[in-house]
Amino acid sequence: MSTALLILTLNEVDGMKKIVPNIKKEWVDEILVVDGGSTDGTIEEAKKLGLSVLIQKAKGHGAAILEGVEATTSDNIVIFGPDGNHEPEEISILAEKIKEGYDQVLISRFGKGSINLDADFVERFGNKMFAFLVNVFFGGQWTDTLNESRIITRKAFLELRFDTLQMASTQQMSIRGLKRRQRILELVGNEGERIGGKKKMRPLHVGYDLSRQILKEFVFWKN
View 1 (cartoon, rainbow, N blue to C red):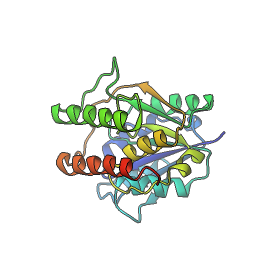
View 2 (tube, one colour; view 1 turned 180 degrees about the vertical axis):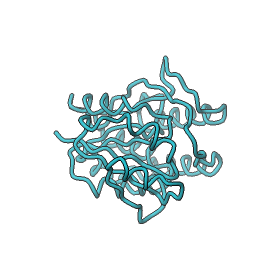
View 3 (spheres, rainbow, N blue to C red; view 1 turned 180 degrees about the horizontal axis):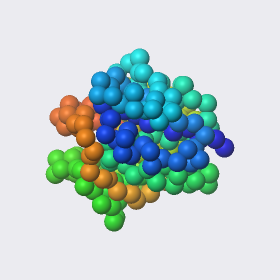
View 4 (cartoon, helix red, strand yellow; view 1 turned 90 degrees about the vertical axis):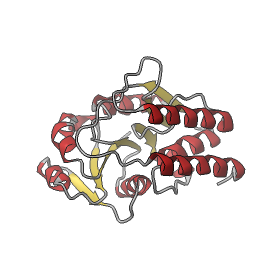
């Protein structure tokens, strides 16, 4: 089975210089940088590394995932951000683990033994709260339903009827995977310090979107 790696970027030139070169091309079959309109040299740096770059037509994290999936052909899709929060080695771990028959495999930043160097108190509280709500409403057993570092089979992704374009995108993948009884595995990982750039998440705005999404997905169970 083939695997595509989507590297989602928006002004991540530091990560493109320091993180992406540590990604070994033999880990996957396709690598595509999906850029949300960087102006700091991210796109140019990606091209220097010999990587294909797709400029998003629509704005948002979910839009990047959707357009990246549509632009690739592999059986499995890895989602990765080069801002320093994710460890490059996770890519090879995810690519190997999905071969065991899972529909999704995700990395938890808040599992037992996880080291998290980036989240502040509000983010830790919010992440745990939303993981709890997703577990209660949809029957999960996860410690992190929001992390983008994950792999999903193309077949499973199409089953989700994915349509969230903004930051609630990964939570939708988690929720709809549970609703469709997909085989999902959570692995304990870490979250490193951010390398350059600024956090793109606005806690109140994102928190509202996540809460509304949970209620909508529960009330309208069939999507």
